[in-house]
Length: 114
Image 1: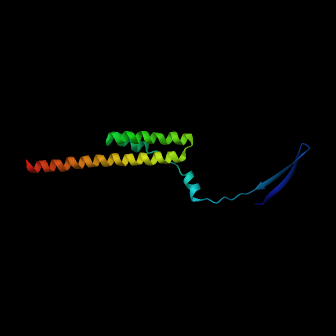
Image 2: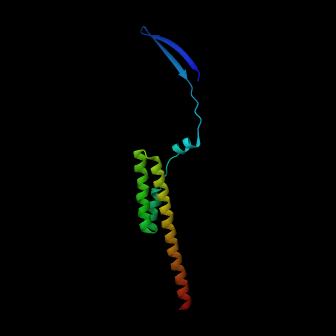
């Protein structure tokens, strides 16, 4: 590191200032640490209202945990809670689609026999 050195006298006191330039290499870990963590709060609320409720409510709780963990400085815990919220939302939607499929197939089968 090289820089410029300047000397200045103010009020009878001599002050020396050295300006340095620093270049930092960015690694994958640095970029991952800066990337924001999504909470999926809106998706979780939509799943709680429209899809399988028990998993949707669990997703809302997990999504709320993301902000709490970020406020406490627990970045890895916030990422885990974010992934858990997204996973619970997907599970809630999957269970709902499965139930709808069972209802449709059952009603078609029932109407064909009667």
